[in-house]
Image 1: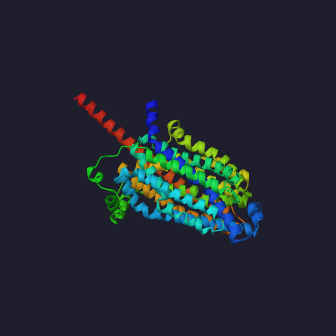
Image 2: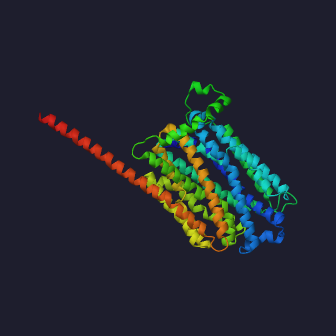
Image 3: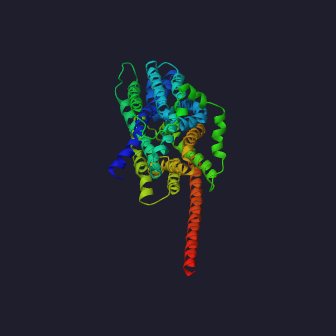
Length: 489
């Protein structure tokens, strides 16, 4: 890749950097929000006292600690439902909107950022009215949910990737997104621990919760400002009939019941080489991969408290350390496997899916710090699974269908994620006393589904390529025979 091509590629990625800043802002407050809720529950509702509430993670087997962790599980359940429920409705229409009116891409990108500003402001207020019930923290999530949340911003970014990216770089673009997600997780886990460990920025607060939320607010505002100032790097086709419509007319066109039938038609129409079956299996596999990884957050902190007895500071420090191998592999793995080893996207998906299943099983079987670290090292390729599967989807559908396909894929991720959150929290709550690792083993077994799908897709592709090569060889032989016959004549 020469310097000009590299510059063009960076130009395509400029909104990815906005996503990176937004993701850091969002994830910076995730663990802190859970701990704030636990403090409110421990001090306000359970009345357990400041000395116990500050160190309850050091007593993982006590009834009081398990009540706090179960309360945190309930909070994470409601948090996920509130934030993601509107996404299931939006998913029916947003794909059509993005596909037919791409000039509204920036609206899709910035709306969740504005909603996130409202969310962070609400959480900040909760730090000053500490005596308020933890349910008020859930109410702060409503504006963010109505703005589209994570669903909308990722739908917009994923849909835009095929619009301006050369086909051979699509998997790299998806890998960059996952790399940015890992970078944001690593940096935010470290920064949140350091910020929370500071002396409170405001007098009268137990911990520096307000400092974390203020930094998140600043980063969120920066991401919003950059997104508003930047111009889209992909070509937007000129369609006078659509371009003449104002926002009200566009909304009227988008939110029609007929769009449900149009969306369904994309999936039921016949496709060659088993591609209709492939599409259904690939989309469901991406949803399972993403839900398994992302929705572990619903119990991740509580799991570390129960199994390893870690405090918030120790947890964020260890998390920062174990994020390093997956971050490196996610950024470089797909490009190296594709360019240097010549692997197909489906083969890369097999490697990623295997790593994903082992990532959970190892941590479920070996309930120690060594097992935790080993799981992350062996599972370094885990996020590569969804990267490769998305790239296979791009090759399976027509370019015009990508927006609706990826919008529905993201919605299915939300729907499966809802089930995953309930599975994580309910199984962990049920087994928290005797066998807390059962949930990890169960998720590892479920994660074998994308592995089987990737293997099947690889076999189908191999047979198709052999058949295609055989047809080409037969045609060449036929032409040679005709040429020799004409020469003899």
